[in-house]
Image (cartoon, rainbow, N blue to C red):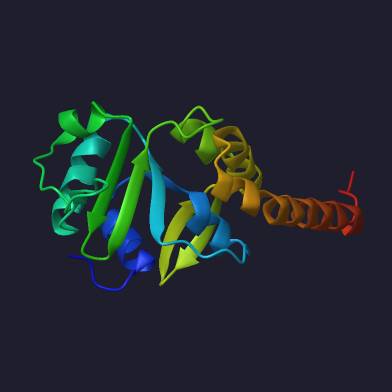
Length: 177
């Protein structure tokens, strides 16, 4: 079903439909300097009914189907209520795989991740991306082998980011009295 993986195309459809979400996972880390490539887009959406309705509309345009191991993707009917009733959706779309998780491991969901999210411009579209520290927190809590492999590099990126922020604060002139 999917053409070549096109993460920005998935994100662009979500943004165009006004879906409130934070980009998480490997793709979010890659956008912030991680050398590890991924083959899916992971998001955490806001969990209000209006947002789920917008997400449902976007999934229709994306031709989303449920991804299940050992079988072809399965068509499914969805609306705001059905999307809200499941904590994790593993989907495939015409642009590649999309995973939707309301409460990623080690987090409290959308509001928690949005607090420290950074804004990144992707093909001219502004996107909220989980901070590297939050990505590390989530991957550490998940404890999967693929996450353990990526964590040393991600922690190094967080350390560099922290050092750069400290350097900026040190160089910033004092506020006038």
